[in-house]
Image 1 (tube, one colour):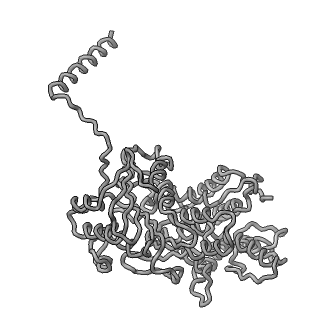
Image 2: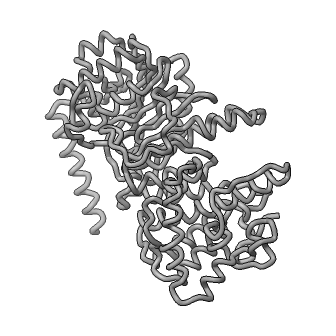
Image 3: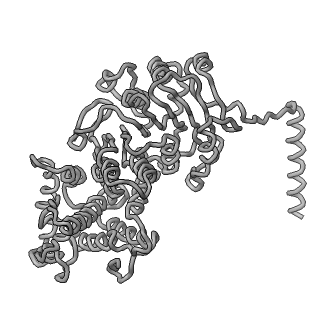
Length: 518
């Protein structure tokens, strides 16, 4: 039976878990973490350590049941159950009759004022950050270090508030969920990440709407046993959706070996931003990915911050799913690494993606519409020619203008789908650009239903059509979607007729105003 939370209530629904997480964020907001860009990173490492401890306790029990040895990533007093969990002398901290749960926390509480912050800031965090430097560090220990890499000290202002947060985090672990209402804690975390991406939070550059990600993953259809790569992975949205899709395709009959490969040797990504990189790692772990292989550094320049989790990554991948940053500019250091030199970030990323695919490898990519229609810069044209020569560009989907409005970006975007091993003979287009979307009316999966239905046969409709390679070349490699089926309403009245209509309407308005004044 699930343990009840601190208020004596089980967390049995998504709304109850959401409310519990919101209460943590409320405490953080009044404790020196005013916005989502402050409190989400703080909650990330706390939630990660809580779930890690829970997972390792379960793994230790499983090993003991079969008489196998289990080597934990963390030893006392650095485990959540030692320093963060509330004291309970009826619960053992290690399952072998040793220290009770919360023994270190109680010890610190009985010490001098400031002892808790002294231990966490001066002993715990340096220990966790340093795990990766051990000569025999395990992959999990390296992940721990990387998630904690940017945490120098607790941001929460007082020990009292910090202990309040610890209690609340402890209460919302996966254990607290009633088994009859299975609810993945990862979904709560996804909701927090979306808050980071809302307009005004300066985090929009890291987020792609979930519906767009799901539509792209379904179209590319990564399969079990294939490798998936995102060279600008942000918080890991594409990798996580690919993981879900592949796990679902395996079904209930998946073997232990297949699941191990999926969790340990399938997902690869790169991320430059110091704030986002550890959040991406934690997000993958919370979704069940045992060994996320994320590289920390600048994908385009090759400058590495940390590559210890990426050492065994393949050079080429079966699937690439990505949304490179819009509107970025790169200097000569990045440009010298590419055949077609330009400062336009997305053009360089497109070259990188093509070069990262195996023969027969598939890609789904979000791209700024400007890349498609610009024909006045040599690097743009050369890159698009390379795309059509080296790959089969089988689909371009034109998204509505407000697709990224919730992330604070008003850029008009498209989705590119292609397979390495061209050349392209014809391109199937699908047009969603006329759909009105906004913050209160976002794009949904329902908007992609016809696209998904027509895609296998490249069927034609009012929204879809095919363009030949020859037509593209005649347009100077302008790939912009121009729907030939769209009905354009033209006012065929003469100027005099229009003026007469305006005057007549004006007289009607004047008459109506006079009636109201009577």
